[in-house]
Image (cartoon, rainbow over all chains, first blue to last red):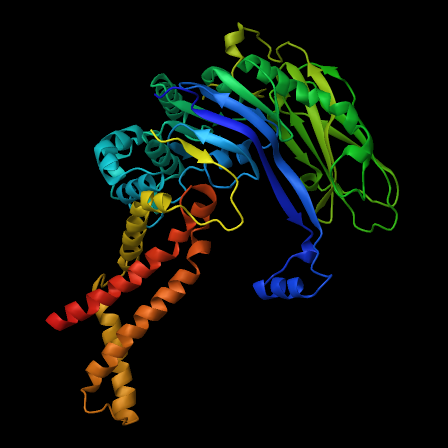
Length: 404
Length: 141
């Protein structure tokens, strides 16, 4: 690999211009007419910074995890590095070809056979015909779909589809590999294979950029991490520090969001207060969330609420939408409600609860981390064993065995 | 190894010739894809390339020569109409296919880096492929 860093990003910004919808021109002619009419051509444009003054360097042979909450700008960053969108300001220098695994299987055509798609996809990713021919066997072997090479891809299962797509991208000899949240697919065997492949890529001295919400993957695989917080890059050091920062971000904004003015949503109906009945509970115990939504007389429509329960890693464990149990509230008076979550049994740890009010197809209030609670480290099962009997999985299942 | 530099685009930015050249194989693959797909899963396969305009010409001959009794300037009506049809098909094929090409390849434009301005070209490959196939195969028949 050449000297110097593999990726140098300096003062990178990306600004999107959002047009108010009524100003949107449907036809080019309409846009032209507006331009010609003096005075009225000014459009109201809101600017939105997806990335703001981001600078960093990545040395060769590093696996870099990019973490951050939804909408922090992770995917925008990858898109710019991939040259799918152009930056608004700043400069990026890349020390070699970029191979991307942004969306697995883009460019796959369902009517073509596996073989044809490997060639098509490889070409799209920037491989020469000769390169693909040389690696064809390795690709097929990696995907494990030899038997179905001449079957049309539309007859493949999703798993096979993804495996073939990943295999092609993994065999691209690009100096920089960009991976966005693709490991969630495939069985554990295949996931392990992908992880191994990425480590291999890094050992060759190439660079891997990985976006993931699964902190487990990041800490397993990466030797450095970037933490993006609402389009800013937060200075950091090791993977652990970045991950700490990420986890802290959840608690940091919570107090501010108590004030409805800081919360997103259209605002016609807002939560006045919300709390968890028992902020320290045991696994298997009911989680009770109590909330009050302010009145908006004359608003008309009945509305419903949604509650998300997230674990420490920011993973959404449960969605409780009141529509599915036919629970609706009336906007004419203040309305209090209570949610009882009986299963799943939550594992020990800290949890946060996000609350939403939905009316007439809009989210009128989005209150992330409205409340939080702890689950104590005890087991809900009648016969406790060593931790390896219960420490896998995200929640404790309520299950039974019986001989038949 | 060449360093790739990404900077904000200027007001009028054209794709770099080098980038286009790099992606030339995409053009070939897309063209091949479109041609294969057109005739896959049709009962007669590639025979359609010749059959379709021949049948079309036959209809025109029946209508204009036999029913409307137009004059073809002393040329055999079948040849006269067939030649005209081929030229028209080439033109209309390229135009109609190219129109929708960016939208129908939306996934590629928004998710994979490749010069978007290549999109309309494969459609024209398909139209011209059918164009060149026809005279040669009908000449031999």
